[in-house]
Length: 492
Image 1 (cartoon, rainbow, N blue to C red):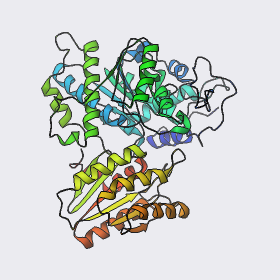
Image 2 (image 1 turned 180 degrees about the vertical axis):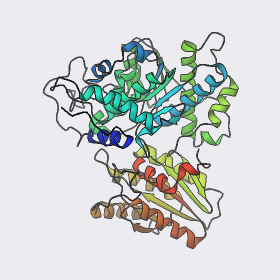
Image 3 (image 1 turned 90 degrees about the vertical axis):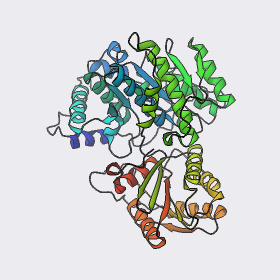
Image 4 (image 1 turned 45 degrees about the vertical axis):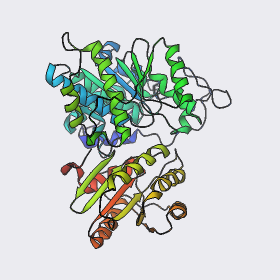
């Protein structure tokens, strides 16, 4: 059993957290079904559940660190799942609730739990939208870790990375007196660690698409089944518009739990020209977020203040920010367009946003793409092909393929460790040339060198527009290098 660490610093907490990463995703089914868990049929109708689901152990660990179901319920949780737009939707919900609270006194504190982080792990746990301070992160981390790691039962497993940081978030929100919390699932929903939440006020499913198919299944119906796992009897259930087959599964799952599912169309009352609602997918995310907030306030707002005011909505939109998603950073004549899209659906939206946003600039302005994706969970070549197809309506002068380390430590260096990926880079180049024959292709071993190359090209051309996309790890490293948090005026 691990001994009590002497060093209780933030860095020590991060080191322990990283040590709890699972080396690889399970590829075999467990010998028996974990008690109390249902199993979704695979494409052939056979049960398909690989490894031990992340939800296993969460309830026991929460009780072990001293938190009852009632304490979790008192956080007044909105639980959000989906494929696309989860983070933005969560941020909109938080912004609206925070604005309402500033006017009415409830909630006095909001909590926001999202994943993954862009740069630092504490970004996943936010109080009134601000990432929790490092000293508090360390304190709450060790309050959780000390109890769990000193368990006398040597056969009881310790939580893995995502389970552990989710436990820390629950603990921090309870200790900080959060009165409204928004939780984003990690993957899926039914078996997700965050689905230990038993009595949310509202649940939301954002736009569904094909992602994490090795864990969730090969069809949109499989994915919808998992996402709908967050629906709970007695809680409001809302969804973005979905394709028919996914909507059918969501409706069936909602019916099984005895609840009505509301599909939310774009809200016509939202301001037409707000930059925060561009591109249109953000309007969709904002609409479902606002609908969820209205349902939340019906249940939890003080008497006489149950409705969100139009001024709250406008302020909530104006103060909305979600770094790394449809983010524009302008540095002189250099315009950096950053989006952490990492699947086919999302990269096409990122490309459409880049095309629309770059219109109106002088025709001679150089356009650059920086792309990277290193993933065992999805086919990077298919993602790049979708990106290249969508961008085929404009001329991309230069394409820079690069690499990143998913476990990059930004406290030590911004340069990503080089890896040998010559075969993948060659395949990327061949795919790109099918759609953009006149682009100049460059290969850089890490993100810092890719940014340096883009700056050099932009300097020679007296200006440039660069789209950085393909991975949240890529965008996080780029933002770190660009020092975006110090000059975030271009964020949307």
